[in-house]
Image (tube, rainbow, N blue to C red):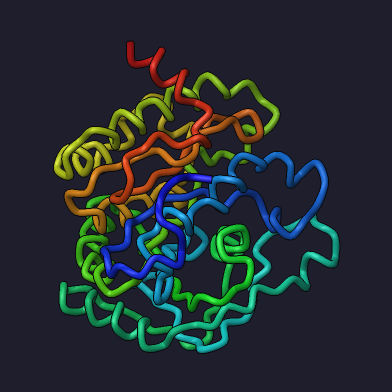
Amino acid sequence: MSTANTPSATAAQRQPVYYLSHGGGPWPFMNGPFRDIFAVMEKSLQDLPYQLPEAPRAILIISSHWEADVFSVSASPQPPMIYDYFGFPDALYRIQYPAPGHPELAHQVASLLQDAGWDVDIDPHRGYDHATYSLLKPIYPEANIPVVQLSMRVGFDPAEHIAVGRALSPLRDQGILILGSGQSFHNLRERGKQSLPASEMFDLWLRQSLLNRSAEERSAALVNWEKAPYARLAHPQEDHLIPLMVAAGAAGDDHAVCVFGDYVANFATSAYRFGGDTATSPYDVLQLHTRQGSA
C-alpha cells in the first residue's frame, strides 16, 4: 500500500485526476484465470483511495464506452446496469454496482460545458457501462460514492476533449474525483498476435509525452497522438484513448505520474495520475523498460 494519505484524511485539498484502464468485460466480478490477467492492475486500483487527500464527494467518469453526437451527462439518481460485453457466463449479466447517481452534479457538469460553448444533453436514463463499474468495483467495492458519467463526442477530436477537461477542472476543488476510463493499448483484433513490441513503443511514447512535461507540451503531444509509433495499431479507434485527453485537460499544470504499468494480455499498458504524490508507484512494473527505452 502506498504511503499517501488515507481516505479518512480531513484536509480539504484539490483532488487529483486519473486516466485508468477498466480492463476486460466484468473481470472484477469474476474469479479464476481471466481475473488473474488483471492482478497488478487490480492492486493499483485498490490503492487509489489511499492516494487521495480525502474521500471524494462524488466521481465523474469519462467513459470510453459512451459516444454521443453532443457531450452527454448521466443524471439518473439510481442508474441501471448496461452489460456491454459478450461471451461471458449468464450470471455476469445480472451483476450489480449499486452506487447512486448524482443529478445535481450532472447538471453542474452540463452547466460548466454549456458556459464554455458546448451543447450538452442531460440523460436521465443512462445506466452504468462496464467502463464505469468494472473500474470502480476494485476502487470502491461498497459502491457508496455517487457517480456521474460523461460521454465522449463523435469525431474524437483530441483538442476538443482537452478543452472539455479544462472546463471541468473547477470540480476538483469541490471534492469531485475525475476519472478517465479507457485503456492505453486497445486493439482487440491483435489478441494472440505478436503485438507486444509495438505496444511497448506506444507505451514509451505515452510516458515520454506525459511525464515531466508541461501542460502545453502534454497537450501538443496528445493532439498529435496519431504521429506516435504504432499509434493506429495501439488504437484502431481512439475511443479508449480519448478519456486521457479530458483527464489531461482537467489536470491543468499538475504533473503526471504513472500509477500502473504492466503487460496485460501480452500488451504493455499503463495508467496515470495528474497531481498528488510524485512517488514512484510499486504497481508500475514497466519502469525498467521505460528507463532502458529512454537511455
